Length: 74
View 1: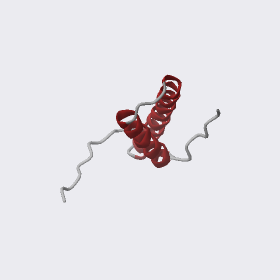
View 2: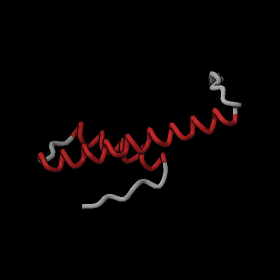
View 3: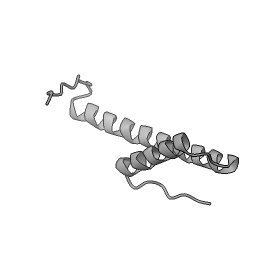
């Protein structure tokens, strides 16, 4: 069964969270567990690639210097 690629990082992360929840709380048949695990790996790779692309874009915007991010506490 062919899976659709996620549209964006947020969709991939949401599906990955659902997979994680399912695998932690359900007893899946072996074949289904393997397919679900493989889908999770593909989503992790997708998210890593998107994060890497964003990091590269930020470095370009910051003149090739990765700066420490300071977040204000709420």
